Length: 413
Image (tube, rainbow, N blue to C red; front, side):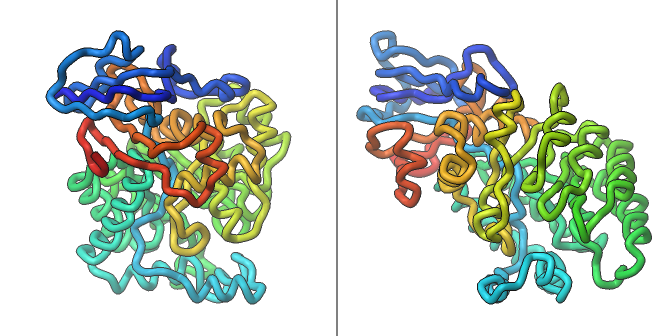
């Protein structure tokens, strides 16, 4: 089955060199083509070009009417499988409590773990399904979903089985990450190394045995897991083919970036407390630094220095960090706006960070994140808007008219 989109005012995100990621000055180039068409054959992009060369027939035809077409967002860091909100902690934050203080009082991740323990797998699935549908409607076509609100073997497996069910039943491209080392459960207070041993010797083999995860993650930060413990967990995961992804430097300069790079982590995420030492170790590494401005906005903490990273020659990615406690939003368009307003990225840099580079940060940039022949047909058509810059500028406006995933119309025309 073929799908032709004709009369595209501007087709964005063209990847002429089949690059898997963009770095430094290359991030300023978000290539486009005016007055164009895009042809999809089943799940993949098979042709695009000037309207003067457009095919005359296809099984389905969409007239874009001069609107813009973009590759779908890739959200490489989410926690969307959780049991209910944490709105009370929002009030605690208003009243002046910090993220760390709330965690010490049994809130934060431990609060979510307690809620999840008492929630059935079926209920978790249906709650998460609503969030997936919201992500899709807002332009996201691929996402990484982490566990980490289980903090016991049974509950971590329960979370990852929900992620697998979402993979099987939704059009969203999903990668699963095992994050058993998200926090130390209350039962292991004062015995953190024992919990790390449980993660390494029991959880990882069972997760891998069921094929439930693509990656392994560790919250390597002040008050959570040390560099040494992180190294143990990454080594244990690597034995089962689970590549690392790291939460690092959200709360303090933790050494998480360095240990992540040393173990070949695909991405290091958060990075709010980062400087030259982190920039230097990321140079020439295969690891993608990923900013999560939604968490900085919600927690009122510093923003990751993505501007300085790009200026130093690095590539960067953006993700939503959608979760119930520190970033309760899956709206990647808002993430673009925060990146431009608070991190000083240009709109072109922000789009590249949220598409091709975020696809790289979840291991799918060979098939997702840009417009190229042979890539997955995950795109969205905008409503009538005047320019690329207008998208992050008008930060609350709904601008998505039609969503196409895997070559099929999901919403819109």
